[in-house]
Length: 151
Image (cartoon, rainbow, N blue to C red):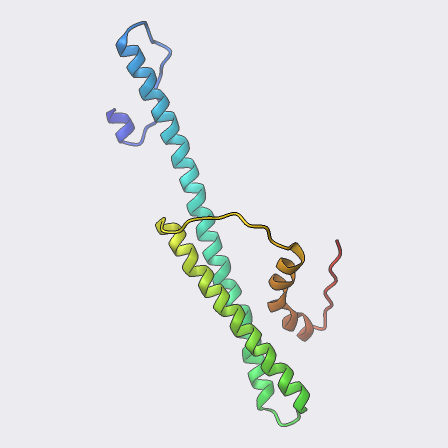
């Protein structure tokens, strides 16, 4: 028990004999094995959560950069009214995307704290992909690239 408490989950049950102590030793071994598996799973979940938070932080930089470029362009007098309206709408979409990302960060923190309940629901894949790609459309256009979806 001292070894388990110290974090060593290796128990040798090969020397078991019949009797109550061997049964107890086997039960402790089973619990210890499960605890070791649980700790591995917990560590993997923490790594995934850290990666998700890092990814969202990086994703926040994209709309900020895009809005900064558009704000600079909006200050220029050579833009047409249509282009100004388009930039303004794009900035609004980027702000909505940032709001979604911040909400996602808050949800991840609730998941980490264990204060959120999950539910299953069906999601339309095309809508999901379109929503995910929406914040990338301006940087793609600025770079003169094209986006083609197939499937």
